[in-house]
Image (tube, one colour):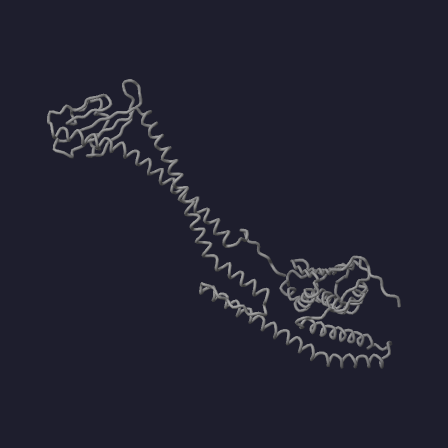
Length: 436
């Protein structure tokens, strides 16, 4: 029994998986670049305000350097002072003197005497020989925030458009590169299909990538080894079957002679009949192996068979396998007369019934047969399940015959029972037996 392990992810082509991964990469890059641009924009907006104050400080220092009597501005929203002590006490206490660094503005937020929320900025500049300068600037918070929001939105929109265009171009470029990179694999698949369709013709692999040529050569070498193995196996089967034919014919002739000489009342007559049936089955099996070993097997002639009667005959032949055991056989016969490859059909049913009889545990062997199918199940010993798996050669032979005749063969094994179902493509209308 073959176990099929289903993959968690659906099976897709390498190109489809590459496109999906590229899409994920594009989304990740887009989000990452937008986050980077957003952070940079916020930083630039903050630096723009600070640079604006630095420029004002430079202008005032230059004015004081050129004219020591230059009057510094003293307005509510913008003012300048030569010394820290010159700053009004109410404003000075808003800032910490210990945090003041040259050309690095400090920022605070306050509610002024009019009850308006505003931002305050303090900058100390000492670039020129003016002895240093303190600049104070206050702006209404609503105006600053509205301006910042406007700049941020505009920057975000422009960044999104530029980033999206960049990602789109990058996606198509990488997709094109992936397509070119995967093209040799597509050629390898096409080459393997040609080899599959024409296994007898040697199709040389000529790819632009040396590794693909090595893979193709390995595949051809493996295919040649499998072909040689199959040929050796078929040759062995042909030779073995031919070697069996002569001794089997001698055995059958000898048994026929003994059956003529021994009376039916003789106690040994039943054993002789059993040996005759076994010999006939071996002759049929030899013919079947020869037929399977042929490269192009000729069609097997069909004849009318009473499948139910054939099953009961096989039961009688193999009854000795289940004698003195607590085993019952239940048969549901719903089949009439069918037209089928009689000899192969007999071999198949004999193997299935023999396997069930030989490998069954105590219980009931259930058989159901119709015009289109045969099913048999038998209990198995759960403590000796590995031994039950050796339903080997008989089932392999049945499977190969079924495959060559386009029959459907299913075998299943679990902890409680083994079950075989055989189906063939026949009309469900019973075939009438020819008149004698």
